[in-house]
Image (tube, rainbow, N blue to C red):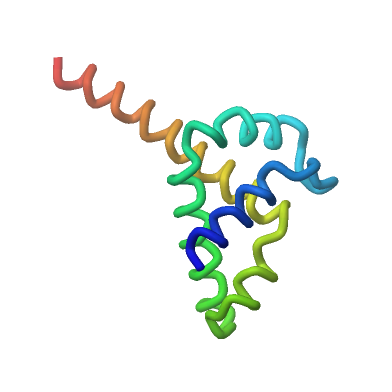
Amino acid sequence: MQNKLKIHVLRMLLSEKPEDVSEKVYQDVIKYAAIYTHELCSYIFRSVEYNCISEGIILNDENILSKLTPSYCILRAYEYLKYLENQHEYAHECEELAR
């Protein structure tokens, strides 16, 4: 099932831009989706599992797939990309401090 979920997430990421997602967010995700495919899918899986658990929703295929909308996937992917960006900036700060 994991490969099917990964394919589903990729379809959601590459679908038409949802109206509730800005063009900048959508373009950033599309730009990096091929580079960070595995990482984005893993992050989105963990996010949807966490959301289901925190909302008291049973973790089954049907409930997980119902949460994986284009908007949800794109916004979580963007969230992960921002995390990577911040980690990269933090690494440069640490490198400068070490000098």
